[in-house]
Image 1 (tube, helix red, strand yellow):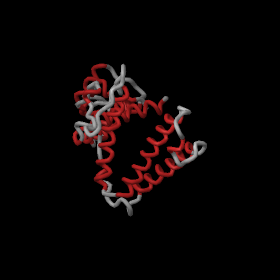
Image 2: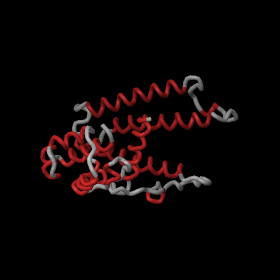
Image 3: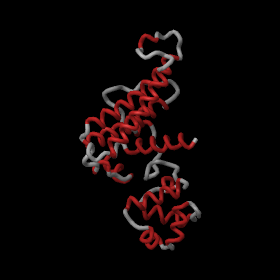
Image 4: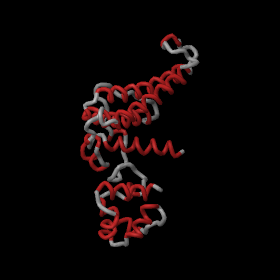
Length: 222
């Protein structure tokens, strides 16, 4: 399934309408819409415009060229920052600041959802997973300079990578178990969401969040 077929299927399902109803509204047969949603056929420009109007999104979004429904191209100035910590200035490049703010936006949404769950164990487990990711990357960078003392860390250099990766795998499994265990998470309605509801509930952070998702899937696709 390509980006176009995946996105038009997502938009229809998020609206809660059947393929038959969408095809009727769009003035095509259900069979043809099914082919578009499965990636078996490519649509023409006229129908693309009809889709954009029907779902109220930009053509760049529906084609998978941008993560923002309106097609807005973001700059570092458009992204909120953590006002408690001043962004560092990097000579000749805004990329580190941009990525920092993208992750900051994503963490705001993630932790708000965790807070809505009211489950301390889930929040702690997710936090432990993220802490390990930061630890692994920082220690790798730190250790690249042989002059830096390894006494900063308790875990031995020859085992830290394997141990931290194994711990992350276990924590990811623990998170999966927690969110799917009805006895632990009695009410998961707080996790019911669509791309449209996320954009509405988090107007400051959703653009950065959707860009992180798109970037992550681009990395996986490589």
